[in-house]
Length: 286
Image 1 (tube, one colour):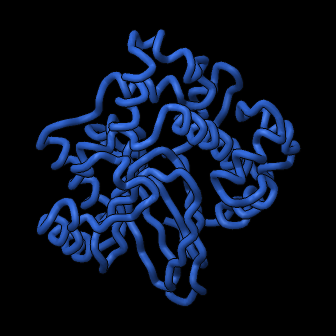
Image 2 (image 1 turned 60 degrees about the vertical axis):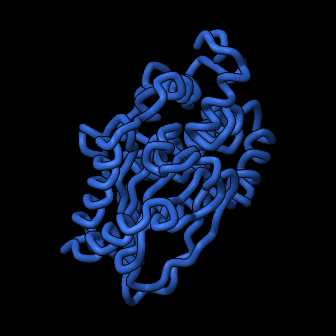
Image 3 (image 1 turned 135 degrees about the vertical axis):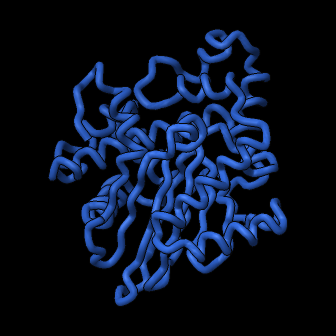
């Protein structure tokens, strides 16, 4: 792994046995001699299991808006991000109860959460600490449950650059609109329309990360072009959604992405699959 300058964020794909429930396993680090790091989190449609090394594990619920936190110098945080719609078996409660919240895992898992925090702290490297969280997901998956197949298919159809939209899903999936809304909300903690908006914005982030990977600024081609490529009706549509999901204008948000993600960040595990789904329209390499 490359040396850390001030802070870094790196993802990897989960173990093959967990590929159906996890989208990424990640490590975030702030150098001991760095200033406190201001971290902006935007909605991604997912539930995450996270743990700052030396502290207790937490469950991060599905977000509907941005969250800004501060990581102290020397912080190491590891996490495992679930795929949208597969939260209930891990959480032990409806994901909607965690919406826009960060909950100590001990509130839901009892003593098992304390043991998890101890295993993370005892790991010799951040990479092994992240693997401890992955093992916890595997244990809970083996204990029973798993994703709702209908919700998994709905989420697949709501991903960026798919041909389906929310209005067509009931007919496509042979289910009533009411039942679809109930099952997606139970599994993801978000309604189908909200989830669709969040996933479309993830497509925009994927395009921004691809631009950085290629050595370009995310808005080098203009905001209007980026909005069209991400599936927005126009630049104004993008501006409204960006403010709602990030708290910033598109130009300010993408400049922040360029500043913070252009050095020491690797989001490939999250965004490469989205870009590959767009490959029939435009070949990509990430």
